[in-house]
Amino acid sequence: MSTIVEKIFSNHIGYPVKAGELVMVDVDASLIQDMNGPSTIKNFEGFAETVCSPEKHLFSLDHFSPSSSIVAANNHRITRQFVEKHNISHLVEEGKGIGHQLMIEMGLVAPGRIVVGTDSHCCHYGVLNAFSTGIGAAEEAVVLASDKCWFKVPETIRVEFIGKMPKNLTGKDLALVMVKELTQGGAIYQCLEFGGDTIADLEIDERAAICNMAVESGAKGAIMPCDQVLKDWMKERGWSETDGVSPDSDAQYARVLKINVSALTPVVAVPPDIDNVVPVSSMEKIAVNEVVIGGCTNGRYIDFFQAAQILKGKRIVPSVRLVLAPASTEIAKKMLDTGVYEILLDAGATILPPCCGPCSGITGGLVADNEVVLATANRNMHGRMGSQKGKIYIASPVVAAYTALAGYITAKEQML
Image 1 (cartoon, rainbow, N blue to C red):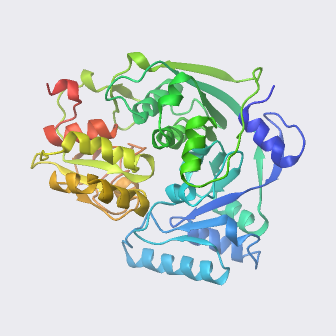
Image 2 (image 1 turned 90 degrees about the vertical axis):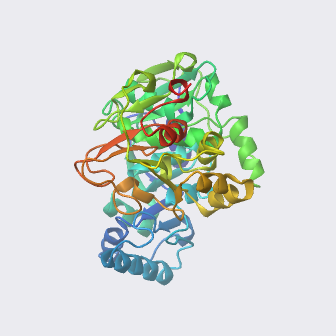
Image 3 (image 1 turned 30 degrees about the horizontal axis):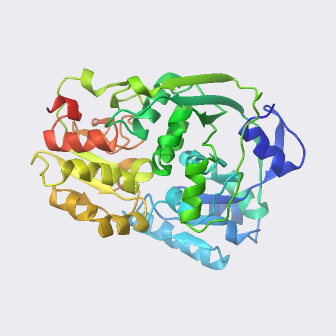
């Protein structure tokens, strides 16, 4: 009668536990990013001298990347010194990628693991059939010192995507529709467990976007199945076979949400609420100043490939800035090898080094007063990507590409 997350915690503890129980468990890996890395280090040095398992942790210099101020540069230096002093195995340098993506690429996440990190979007790692969640700097300091973290085992909401994906619909659209149905506070301290026949048609990259955005509904975690798609992905990377973790047929859920994707069309989240999601076709022509594709939510190869298919041989309108931020150097190299990079450059895009880009409002193409941006990011509250007076609309890479060509928010259907 157990959900995936209940099984993962039970396996780590050595006896069955259910939702609502308080537990202390060993974590398998953690992420510390540069916004709160210095706070984590300060907390750690206040009570500890030795990092328990240096090989388990990844420090990532991705938000202030490339270094955007003297303060950021000094904080990065503090992080580098800590990493060297304690022989931490993994450091993502400026311009080398986003911690969330590198946690996946470096093999720190695997089915059945428990992973934490000092970023709310650590739920991203559930794409590999793991439980992962964001924690604070003080909690992370304890993890560094002991490998341990406490949890209340979360209840589970079962989210099933059913039906065939229509043309131009992406995993990002499913993520936005899911957040609309759950609402911003509809899954607080609950874990989303995904299923349904549509999942088999989604690549790992698209599944990652769905897991990444689970926290926008308040979710504690988000877990995809360990199916043949994931097993094939792991095999391609040379990882060992695993059966992963599956729910029992009689698992108890707090709620079951079924979303029929067959009837969906591309959608957009209207600022300042990420759950104010409407079909693109229902919108009036809203002119944009900037289009952003990338970051931890949609900075993977499939996202740039989808945009390149639309932009190939075309130029964006002069009134629009198109800013791209790949999530890792591995992705950027694949873009180069397949010609996607050149297509996007020729279309008029500015391609940043692999980093968070303007998503968190720190660097890389910020929005000015009264400007409008269409982004594939994960949040659209006031000031998220620059000026408090700017407006951020959130949509898929497909909608982003068509918007860059038109100069206003649109999808393919509206341009024919």
